Length: 237
Image (cartoon, rainbow, N blue to C red; front, top):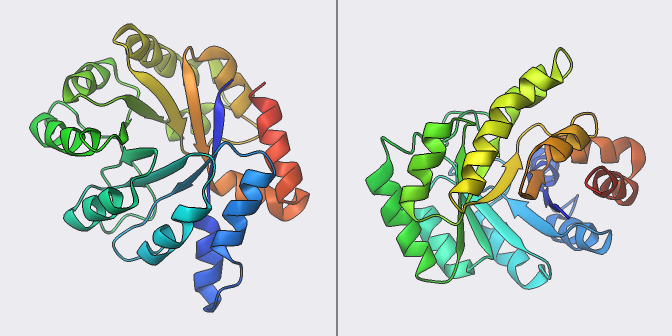
């Protein structure tokens, strides 16, 4: 079964809008696990506009499932990951000025850098995933970095789903097949939702994990967190 990792960044965004500690990010993570989530994802950015570096330290002893830390591997981020020692680190090429992740790595151009980063984390026993567009060439160069997994950036799939889901998923299927052929584990994330998750899961081979935040937390405003997590788990069965 494909695992569901809940990205709790949006909980922190709501907290930060008002100050204080409501809603409580740590309580949300514990509740997500209690309600069936098989992992917790956080994505601290340099400006700490949602998850703060202090949150990551506070969450560490509370995560009983799988802790996934996403981010651009600048020096401060690398130090955080090495200190926390999560189950997985997902490398994302975020620029400082982007609202949300908007592209995968060019693994060909950044091959030496990514090799070095992967080696650093893997030496500490941390599983490494690289955030990547559904392009077969990028999958092939990702395999050369020494990473354990790739995470397919699914915004294009989500955007094209309503108009033509078969066409939207086609490059992801090709990329996934190449990842499986090369022995890479396969994750996916960005704009996956209750509308489009089931079909993606049915079509994509070897899908180990999806990381979902914005849509899931938004759905929880209407359904409640427990019902929402159960609904997403249902789409993955």
